[in-house]
Image (cartoon, rainbow, N blue to C red; front, side, top):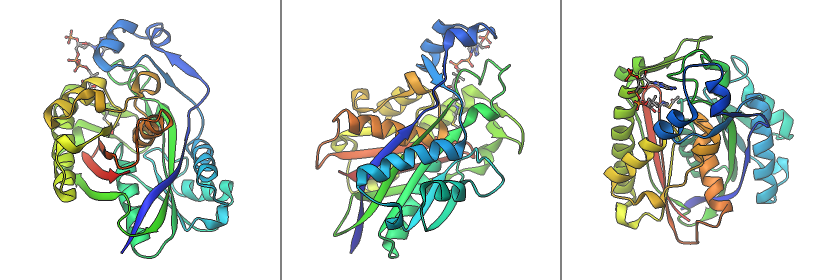
Length: 305
Ligand code: ACO
């Protein structure tokens, strides 16, 4: 059988930092409230989805030691494409790839869907797939709404997935959706994000735990076996509650939300790259990636590093 491993990764954040104090200067909120209720201290704002994607993708290719012609497919997870279509194609062109390129939109769960799709491509014969998660949520944020504006931000993360002989890293996965919950977190085409925060919070914890448990069952492992959890970075309290319900110590969670905010499709690869760059993952470790997002959607992957 053919499996796949992550052989390189990269990240990109816009240069412009927006602090909580800067937000508090334009709306009725405070640094103290935002830190306490979300864990966010600052976020990055700016750039285009294609531009950030290309920066993160280029780094991932370099780390994997691959020239652009070696990539067989580009899968770009984003809920904020630059154009109605063709954002992945722009990235493909920018990076000098000579392969197919597609956008995948599953809100903040997009990277999980993209990663599972990429594994499917490798199972069907592709050798190397570039998977990028990028969002520029600042473009669809209502900057007058204190209920959402402190949360959302921009960024990109990328991984190169390469085929290997044998089992590969992916032991189990799960993808979920429940369209009956779309109304609690949605954005009209051309509009801004509308959210019932409390309800999203409640559902998010449940969706993440259910999805993670399905993926762990599929993988034949339990929460006790997990060495690192890489959760979607929406709210530090959601991460804490999900870890508690899963039975994984919160110290095992990778978190970057304090400095990135919620970057949607980028949040899981940003947190994964941070953990890898800090040497938090050893060969043989069991890594659980788990996301949730609008739709509502959820998804998880269990990887043996
Ligand atoms: N600053 C100060 N006060 C605020 C702010 C703010 N920015 N926002 C809300 N408040 C007030 C509220 O008005 C409320 O006041 P009241 O008690 O007088 O009515 C009080 O603070 C408490 O508000 P809650 O909504 O109960 O606060 P909560 O603890 O639930 O935190 C939050 C709100 C941060 C939005 C939280 O519910 C949350 O994170 N929900 C999940 C959101 C999420 O993850 N969304 C992304 C999903 S992923 C995707 O696909 C985009």
